[in-house]
Length: 266
Image (cartoon, rainbow, N blue to C red; front, side, top):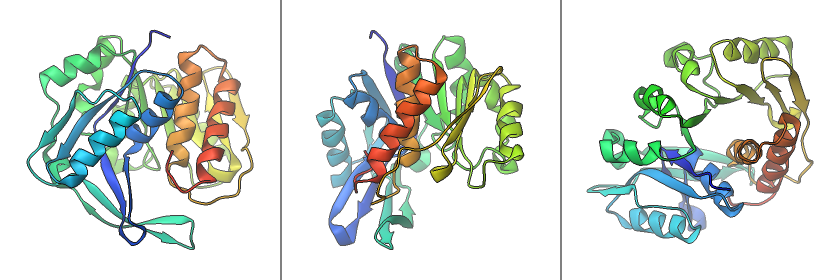
């Protein structure tokens, strides 16, 4: 596979102080780690601080064989999410320390570096949304995670959808007509495939012709962190390999199931 992918924009350290544990994360980073473990060449393009977590982040990602040549280090704190666990399984964000992520802006060198990749992943908080049209013009395929915000007026997602090839969103409801109509409406803006994950209800995916539905792979839930990112990684792996959509959904469900059954986010 001569295809390369880049996780671009937001990254942070999830810090569980009570457990003395930390993980390099962010939606794109989680996605990238899964793909790197499946043999896909992955780069992370973002920023960390000069605190101890910045160095730990770089070391941990390099250990996953991820290209960190464009993971910039700047004076200040690495962005951190201070975490705790509720009921032993559900993660709770105690507070965010934005640190160097607050003023992150991609450089021209970083933009060109990303442009040489087959595909990139970003989200609403990666501070690179204004560059999506340019990357698309360069032929980079764009995967974007809209999380639970795809219908939130604050984010004006309908202005972003045209520049995204593979839209992923979380829908915390039921598998109803609303979500089926919404993925079709998103598709009308231009994406190739629109996929909604719905937790234990599985996922639906629309390609302009067919609306596919897939369930879940049962798992004993240990920690819900990273479930969505791992699904997107599995689906992306299928896309890179030219699989049909149901196969992509199955791979996503399998990886997601494996992730929620352990503590780590990947």
